[in-house]
Image (cartoon, rainbow, N blue to C red; front, side):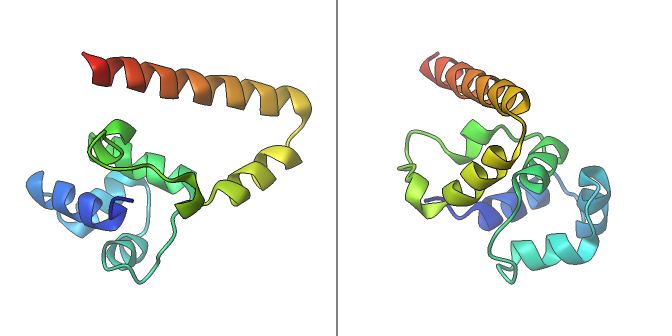
Length: 112
């Protein structure tokens, strides 16, 4: 499993963004970003993760590329399923469909 906090920090530095500027772009607190990058906060919600990726112009595939083995047991899969299960069926199906499309598109892009 890639060290996501390290990748985020390295990308932020490569873009010459300070923690305050990156946090602002991601609509997150400076404190959260600083703690996440130092692994003081070991987990990140999907919402915050996507905000960070967007702010740093990262694609999920940049983090989970074919050189890294993606092991779902190492992430918050149970939490994701619990979250989805609590949603109304129609919403859950729409989110699941969109997420699968994202994964399929990411896979197609990586093949090119």
